[in-house]
Image (tube, rainbow, N blue to C red; front, side, top):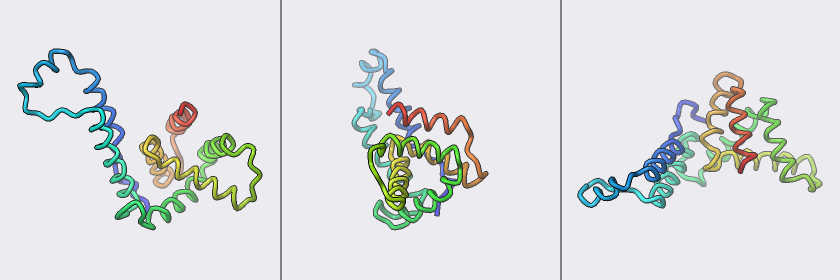
Length: 158
């Protein structure tokens, strides 16, 4: 249902390529017209890494495409496992309270909204961290506190 052995790399690759693009010296730009190596633009990097993110998301769930039922079933499976971790559950509840503080919801709708938050955690800007959390929870039954702090900080700052 979830491949904890899969290494998610899209975020690292994107950051490395953007770093290289931003830190290219003026001399390197001048030398480019004589090089045959293809140079990526910022938009190229984003497009490539968006595709890589989608491919990696499909891979962890063993899905063929984004509408494959394996993703939904896998996320429900992951949700049930992740919500057994009290610290992770606290993070989900903080997000939930920020977005739903004025809404009066039945317990069923509350559960659905918490699941939507988990789906949000699989979005491109969070998947690389969420995947590590899921892997640790599934493989060892707990999540490293530093990783949870990193996840929480990203959520608070975005």
